[in-house]
Image (tube, rainbow, N blue to C red):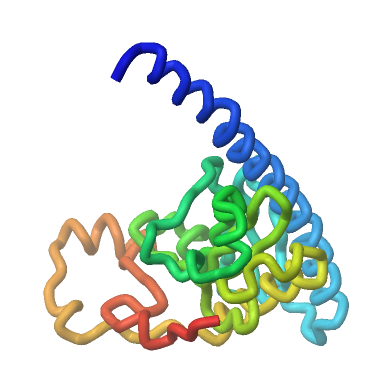
Length: 229
């Protein structure tokens, strides 16, 4: 391949693909800022109707920086994380069966926002080995079209991609479904055989600091809760 040919291909990528990826990043960041405002509104809305004054069950929103936000809901902590990169999908992904995707391949470049569910105590007691679970991930393209992969996110899966742009109503529903699933997703006792032995070091370094490794489904099949949207 000659130098002129390589130069031409590099130029084409810079002129065509690179601008699309930048537009995707800008749109995803815009959506994430919109999400932060909604999380703040959700905090006020739900706290306003809670009967109990117990601070431990009230919602607490916190902006953790450009790409991270968190929402404490009783004993759960939801972490919302925007990835800074733009993604394409592998050729086996369901997105390629979508008519909107077939129309223009640039439509399929997406930014992604992850929704993770942790235990609040993992943060409170700094249990760094504790496990969080992905309960949803939101994909957004350059024009604001979207779809969701996640728990109980019915009607917003890849089949709906290209039919509706993301608005406040849809975004709030996505967040609320993730919160509802997280609250319904109970902490289970680890299998007995996983807890048979413990070293003195673990006792001194972990138990005294409430540091026993904990996750809602530790040792169990998380996939059993999976429902396609």
